[in-house]
Figure 1 (cartoon, rainbow, N blue to C red):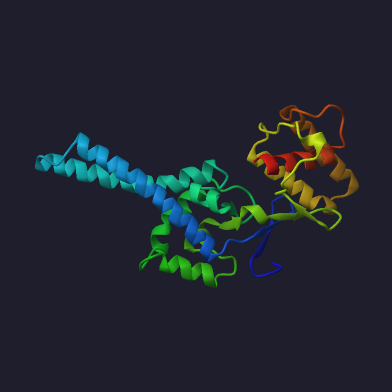
Figure 2 (cartoon, rainbow, N blue to C red; figure 1 turned 120 degrees about the horizontal axis):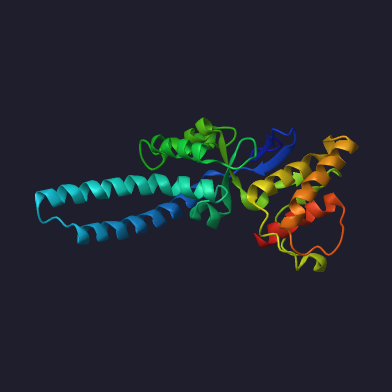
Length: 252
């Protein structure tokens, strides 16, 4: 930890990734936006159930009330788990505020971790208005609520995550432009897990021996070369990997 809101994740490969931790304000805004979306979805579903089943008899009242309760629970929980596990840790609210959920190892959050952190969200809401969760975010070293601590996750600022190159300078993954020679590249087929592996190599390459560094770079480049459209000739493996990260960061 370099300053209060930064976290350095030690990856299984023995390299380090540096993240800027999300604070209470941005996390609260993201949750608020997600709740608005959930409320709108629940309202539409409730109206459909009431119209389709109705309350005309006690049996219909029981069925409609039970269906509304079940749909509400599944939507509230499933919403977070679905988006976090399938959209690189980003719910719509987090995406709008530039946040995402990651594992403490720097890797993507999976279904199991997302489910655990969101089931425990019920405790974080106690006694009201997210009080427990807010207090824990403010006082814990890594800005984690209870669900994050149990699931081994962090909420980070996606737009300001930086890595360290071998030269010791900062490599900003969120560049806003592309040089002409990369403007026609298409990296759509490079997945988020593959990009994570590339990032881990780039930030930790200074720690490898020259032989291991060259071998890893060549292996990664050869695996990703068929997935990238645009390169017109042979490239240095590390330069190729850096170009993938740059294009991906600009185009998403």
